[in-house]
Structures are given as C-alpha cells and as structure tokens.
Length: 254
Image (cartoon, rainbow, N blue to C red; front, side, top):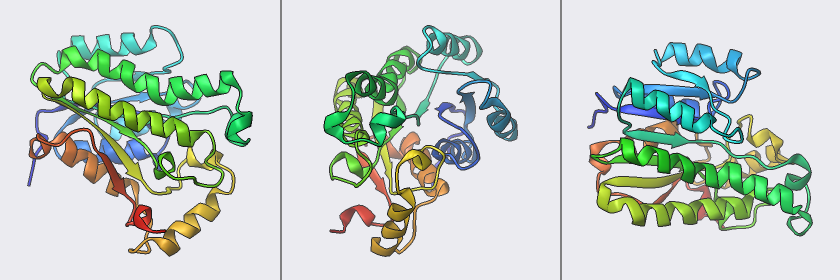
C-alpha cells in the first residue's frame, strides 16, 4: 500500500525491546526507511545499541533532553550525515516518582515543571530542530494516552501533562501545515512497557483494558508501529493534528 523507501527517520525513546519507540523503529525500517536511534545514557546503551544494530541504524548515540546542547548536537549529526529528516518519533515521558504517585493537588512545582519539560516541551524543541531539515515536508509523532481527557486512577500528574502534549500537537500542526509538516499523537491503550511500570497498580489497568476493550486485546508495540509508519507515508499526506487511538476500542467504552 505504501513505502517509506528513501526516508530518513529519527526515533527517540527506545529503552528496550518492549518500548513503543522500538515498535515504531521496526515498522519504519520494515517499510524501507533508514532509522537513527538514540539511548538515554550509558546505563541504557547496552539494551538499545544491539537493537540499533539490528536495524542497521547509521546514526546512533545518547540523547538526554535534560542535558543542555545534547539535542542540538544529535540533530547536527543528522544534518551532516543525511542533510534532511522525513520523520521524527518522540516517545519519552517522565515525572518524578513522588509526584507521579501522589495526588495531583500535592504535586510539587518542580516536579510539574520537570514532567512538562521532558514530556511535552522536548517534543516542541525537537520539532523546531527538525523543521529546517524538512523543506519538502515531513511527519512528527509523539505518544499520548487517553488519561489526557479522562481521569484514570493512579495516572495522576501525567493526565494534565498528556493533555498539554495533545494540545501542543494541534497547535504545531496548525503552524507547520503550510510547510507540509504533519504533527500527530499516537495514543495506545495500556501497554506493558518500562515507562508504564512506574505507574501504581498498572497491572489492574492492563486487566481492565483487556476486559473492556471491544476486541478484548491489548495493543502491541507492533500495532503502534504500523500506525506510525502509515502516518509517516505519503498516503497520509493530508492528515495532521490527530490523536490516534490504538487500543482495541478501549477508549470508547464507559
């Protein structure tokens, strides 16, 4: 149906083989794109580097969005190696444990600011760096969750953070549409990933999602990757600003 042959894609947020970002990287590569892969730090490198090797990633290295200049340095490598970028996948989020596990009204201002910076503003900073590398258009994707619009027990501070992310997607899509740059949020239902393991009682949410979803199946990282690859393709050239549910219909149930 479509091909990504010749495309250049950057995937940020691979932590291990269970990561949503890994599912996206695999799908992009399977459709013909070259993929650049990052890891967070030296601790993550042994888990991520072999995965990058599997995809024959020509650009790999650390990218911690909290470290000044590191993001800019990685985009400089992309500029010098590829000279352009077609697809950006941003799949990172963070909140300090004490703020994530507490009531939202008790969240510290420092924790709130850090969660917003890493989970939302880093996406906007990446888009800004990607924009000059997309003179003929491109696709920028981030990852959300339906706790952005509904109260999900134990999701706490990440609900407002994901709401801000989705709003940012819409505004960025409106601003960049005339340049042919599309912006989307992928919204999988509950998935058993390293990031999700930090949420209290997450196993209960997995069970509830399986029971309530019309398909009675949790989404997989491959499901998410398939949607990411489609949105990155020319077949989706007139789609932008969307929040795409990939959850077996879980989000439509009461």
